[in-house]
Length: 374
Image (cartoon, rainbow, N blue to C red; front, side, top):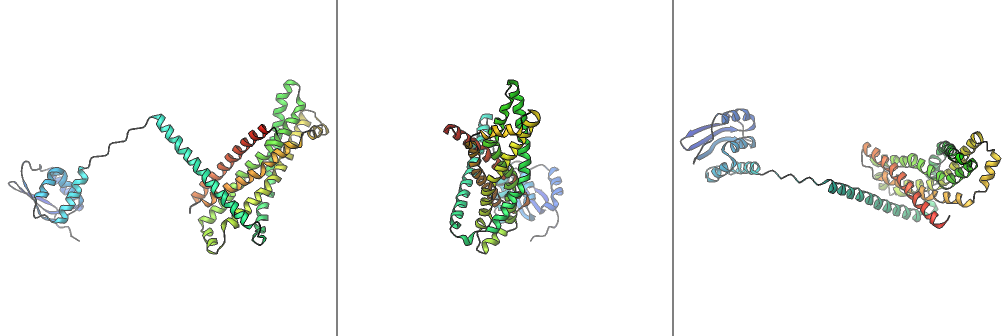
């Protein structure tokens, strides 16, 4: 390693320019002031750099700026006594200073930018659906692989998940659907009252909760409550490398963690749907009794005339919603990286995706049942 001595200096001997001393960053301010006081050589001259004791990129940059990059390149090529390493350093600095800045790319038009953004978002949505379909296939493969092997069933984990996702969710589901039933009854009474048809408020509440509100409100509550919990639990295990420990022990995280959660939701969501329907009808019955003077006997008499198929139409959607919510919650948990921020981000993503898929599937199911006349 070369040790800096005296700062760099310049001597003129006619057309010969002699440089010596240390041209390094430690003497940068002195060198810059010295070059500012001298004019660069004009015309033909000979550059002598053999007396330079130390040279780095800072000194080479000052020399290139003082002589001019093109002129310094010519002078060092003509020099026969310049050390190869210093010649290479000067050539690298000259090349960097001579490089022309890249032309700024033209700004796209607003229409092109909007189309590009739309394409990027479409690609993201397609990738999400592709990953979801692949994870669903993996879940079904694991489920069918253990269905005929009772000794591999995780009954303790299944019962625990049923308790967590089903029994603990009954109060919030019942309360919310009770209030929504009351609101629907108030709304129906307000609109139908203008036509003297308040009695049909009972049919409105019954059809709304039997076909749609019961199952979709229960599914949305589970999407916000349970899917986020699945993502946070599995994501925390992945961040703590517990999933790697399970694989090291020869255990399958899909079999231990995912299948019990999926089966638990498949069992609990139809039951919660029933609770939601009963609570919603109870809220409607209370409003009908208090505001519309419809006795409970008359309310339930009208309710008994509603065809059973409407209840079945709502109930048949519950397992599909449950499967989608559970799969999305578990999938986002496996996508968590090793940070708390990632856990929060994927938990939010699980809730948003679950609610979106529930509403999308409900809309498709409504169109299907309408076309089938059910």
